[in-house]
Image 1 (cartoon, rainbow, N blue to C red):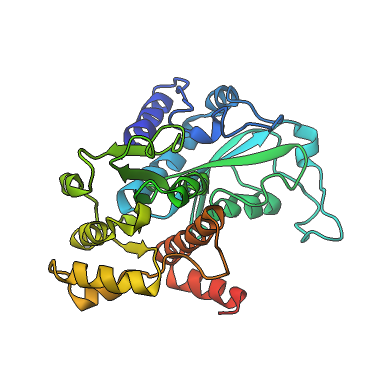
Image 2 (image 1 turned 30 degrees about the horizontal axis):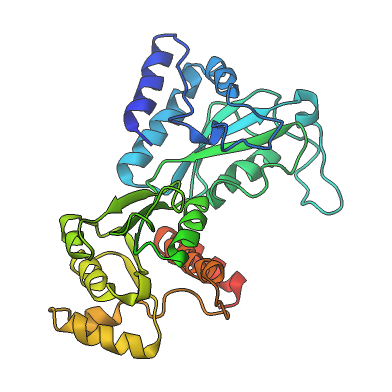
Length: 329
């Protein structure tokens, strides 16, 4: 989230102006994000903008502080499509009881919520609202469509994890689509235009290296927060890719390959200055183990592992402990 956007909203509200909210800044209201949802349209952002007052300034100020602090936090939106229905109590014998009240009111609302379940909003939510507002921490939410008359949207105040796919293999093509779908930012790298085409990677950033090898990879730089998946075709450039990832000290690096290939890559990688400790930090083979064989199945296994790594990295020790217990591990 761009702090300047949040500050401009604050400035407009202080000046008594209606801020301009764009789907570029709040992509949860884009046509792509709302595809198939007849209850919400991108122009609902105009409804939200007109509903904002000076009382909403603390919400946006808290969001700016979260950006500055790198907090795991979201800016959330209550979307009303039937005010009377939204306020009706629709709990039943299956749902947890939240009292006799449904939503606190039939008006849109912008709110702040973080992983610590801190909520900041201009109006007091009902208990049921609070339940759904906290649910944005599941990124963005799991129960946003549970009750009639309203729904919930949110935008993260923290950066996406950047995943590098080194090699434009069939697995990488399947992986790219899945990783983007679950919120990763993806860059794919290869030298062959036939493989690194827009058709195979329509939503990823693409880097086409010069020549017919991975020598040009050294011209590009990862940061320690990035993840790297080594997926070169035929494992031909796995050594160069592993060395590159280790030298950039990325948070996660995984490599495909059988035991025999790993031994060969090990010898080539360590001959280029990678230590045994660094080699052992490379996840081999990449992905969770559940019998995946085809490119699509392998992509699912890898994305599942990336999600697990991201979850462990982002959430507090207390939150992870609770979740790990619920997973039975």
